[in-house]
Amino acid sequence: MSERTTAFHALHRPGRPLLLPNAWDHASAAALAARRHPAIGTTSLGVAAAGGKPDAAGATRAENLDLARRLRDLPVLLTVDVEGGFSDDPDAVADYVAELAALGVVGVNLEDGRPDGSLAPPELTAAKIAAVKAAVPELFVNARTDAWWLGVPEALAEALDRARAYRVAGADGFFVPGAPDDLVERLAVEAGRPLNVLHRPGGPGLADLGRLAVARVSTGSLLFRAALGAALHLADAVRTGRDADLPAAPAYGWVQALSGPDAAARLP
Image 1 (cartoon, helix red, strand yellow):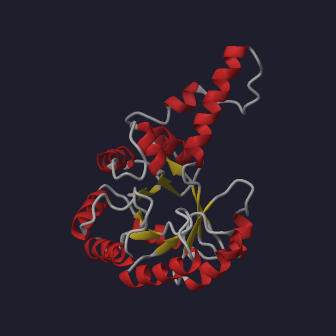
Image 2 (spheres, helix red, strand yellow):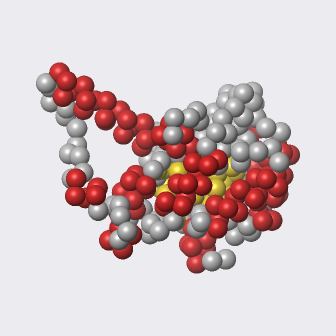
């Protein structure tokens, strides 16, 4: 493995979860790198919405590649949400992920949810995982099941069956957004791979999730949606003449320093 992919794999320690914040453009990624996060992910909703496209519809193949190119010089490990891989042809998915890896990407999220609200057959997602691992063996493949996200019947049994199939196919991690808190520890034990869960405001914190053997906690689209919410709140406050009551915005000069030809050298 390369030094970067080895470092990314090593960040997944059950019981000591990696906080993986999710960025949607260069500024958000560079700002998170400046806050010394060792790794960041992309958020498919943020990337899609920033480009005026729908999320989870296989519409952002080009946008992901473009963003990876723009982030390649940042001093941070990058994993990309590729939805379902933008194809049902496992070889085409592998070719696409290999393009991302060539840009320095060290991991991908590959999900089984479909735009019509159904789950892809587990053997199809497993075939995509196997093809990716054959093409780029060192890349961290975080296999995501949307069993809870889509509200399928018997979600636990479905998720565990898929965890086994994806593990056999070569997945390096297992992601279960929406899984109930009381099932997280069982999933962490039975998945057989580092477990990734989605941070939920008001839910268990990092320390609590660590005690449940979680290895990675993602923010998903939360940071992007919070940024939009703050922008709307501030605009409404300015319009009505009231106090916005928000944390101080980053200074112009600090944001300006995140970009430009020498920006990467100025970041930690």
